[in-house]
Amino acid sequence: MNQENSTAQILVIEDEPDIQELLEYNLKRAGYTVLLASDGQSGLSLAQKHIPDLILLDLMLPEIDGFSICKTLREQAKTRHIPVIIITAKSEESDTIHGLDLGADDYVVKPFKTQELLARIKAHLRRYELYRSAATKPSSFNQENYNFGPLTLDRQKHIIFLNKQPLILTLSEFKLLAALITSPGQVFSRLELISHIADKNVHLVERNIDVHILAIRKKLGEHAHIIQTIRGVGYKCNDLAF
Ligand code: CA
Image 1 (cartoon, helix red, strand yellow):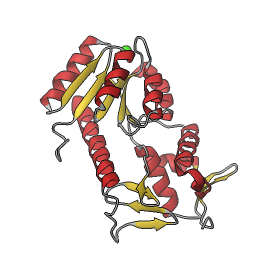
Image 2 (cartoon, rainbow, N blue to C red):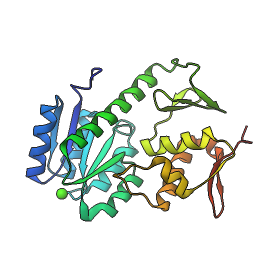
Image 3 (cartoon, helix red, strand yellow):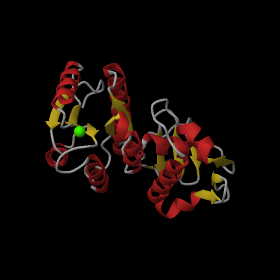
């Protein structure tokens, strides 16, 4: 993939021919290489075979549904990092929250505005590219970075490192962890944390925060205690952890 992302490869898993065609047309026009799948099984196979730079995923699919695909992608080392944007019908919007729980990065609701979708694709590709370059060049530390125990926040690149290795976080997980570690000791309510990761197109409920925190703790491994649960209130970053 080059700097402009123009040759990035995008896998579209969508069973509605009209939408598939529309996506293919607009993605190719924007300079992307496009892989198409009309059912879950072939979508998953293509993802595993080609390791695309980004996946657009419909939820209601024949063979294997979008949730299972998302879960499988996140469980496998080769596909774990690929940004996934869920394409969902308005009526499935509550299901989408579940998709975010399974590790999807973002979602758009049908009928979507092409320009908006392209802008999001670009943002996720950029983030993914920064992550990959950080993973191969972990020495790029500078004074702008914020340190908290074994964690380092690179504000410019939007990456958090754990012991100098980039943590693989979704955008929401990144925003949550960044908010918590940059205000150590401050207790955040779930609603406050929602406001930190809010996006006008993504509607979150308090339960989503718990799911994100759980995912972050898993990724922090032995350092999971950095995030403390404050019963009946929310969460804080444990400033006495080190
Ligand atoms: Ca569908």
